[in-house]
Image (cartoon, rainbow, N blue to C red; front, side, top):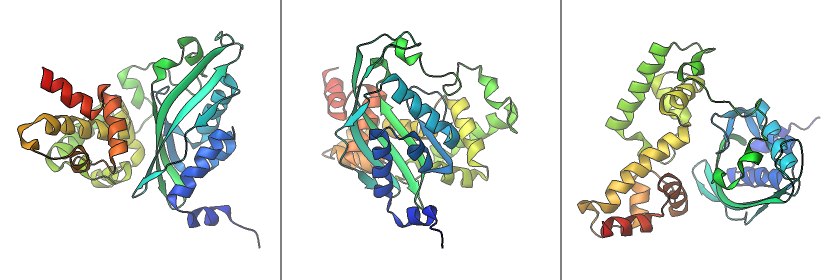
Length: 282
């Protein structure tokens, strides 16, 4: 009897899947990385302005390994789990070698970052990697293949091959804004793209398209942006009293203080503590 590896994957808990994903990057195994994703899984990092599907993930990882043959990930170890979302922090290091990109030899990087990995039934549904892409020289960033990295698009091009008309997309965008404003669904730490699509009675692909084009962000950036926006008001508002930063982080939908701090810094360039101090000095 042949062993079905997907059944084996389903027996593993989300943290084990996240660790396998991290090992794929550490070992430069692009095929292993892509194989962990669900058929409808997505990947995005700051070098991208769209989500990659499963068939594109291996190519993107291979490009990293090509540009940085000695690419390493240090500090990977703690995996914080909240429902089906796992967060892990790392430092990405490597030296670009001379190649056709014109990046030149000897250009090194050492960039801290965080992965947010969503797992369900033993398969990765999404990975959102956060790091400061500005620390990668432009000459190297330009080395990523146009076939993988989306070029600048006009707003209406997002739907050029979609079943959604511009008018329909605008209506969906307005409905999303209304739902978030009235129901504050972003406060639910496990709230995902699938939940929003189910609420709107639309496919996840269409909802993802609308958020990307309508808000200029992927789903998780959109949700985390709303969370950080509310957190900023709570951290400095009169109603804070003696509430802790963790208490506020949990109220707005973050599952842990570490994930809150990482998202807050990404959107404000400050830690929550630095933000509070800056407002007190204003």
